[in-house]
Length: 321
Image 1 (cartoon, rainbow, N blue to C red):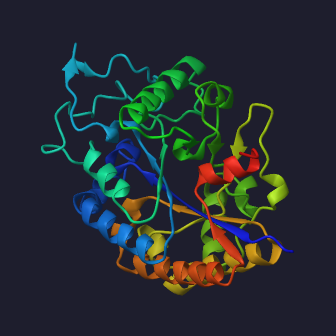
Image 2: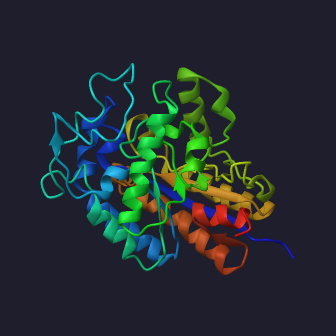
């Protein structure tokens, strides 16, 4: 008897933490301001189609307040001194609370996720979205960042199973295993990944414009490594409508997602879709594209050709748990 394909949806849950260091940060303000409304609509959509997701929360969002001590916040949590970022990584942290600065705190969002009808997973995205793969981030810093997240998960009664690496830069897997994580999201294995600079960006846009079939992964590849960690690699980033990407028709996004689903069903493999919830604020068409893909996911699941899993569930099944 054939095995069903697997669909995974992971969501990089950051609000402002993921982009404060980027030149385009100010342009995301409208999406951050409507973030809670976007989350409500997204959760309703996932409930409608019975799709549990892995919500990779930046650890600081699991706080409802914090304060400055000695001129900074969270001095107990190590962070790198990046060569490309001036000052302390936490200089932007307001050191206030959820009511005054909702871009930086998110316990209300956690409550929404936990109140959903479907059983979502809450994963981690480091404490303050530090780039673990940067040379400035050593093992001690990675351990401090992730240990702080584990403590917050424990305080909220949450499992601590899955990690999404900020900027998809993978590093310090030995630290991940040491702290009890079992799943991580690897980079998409796209044809243009070997390109660099503007050629990579052009390849990425061409891939989305042509709606090529995204990477799907055979079940045999979803095996724990010697540390017990399971790579649950990404297949497709659901492209937002910002900058030049707004010129790519919605139909191309949907077509690419459907091609990924069909390829996974045909090969009994894994198709892993991901995006940031704030991306939904780039255009109402993001919800149109997402729903068209989820309709197909629900149809394949009803037919018994596909199952929906969180990252942790994929990892536990691969580990024989």
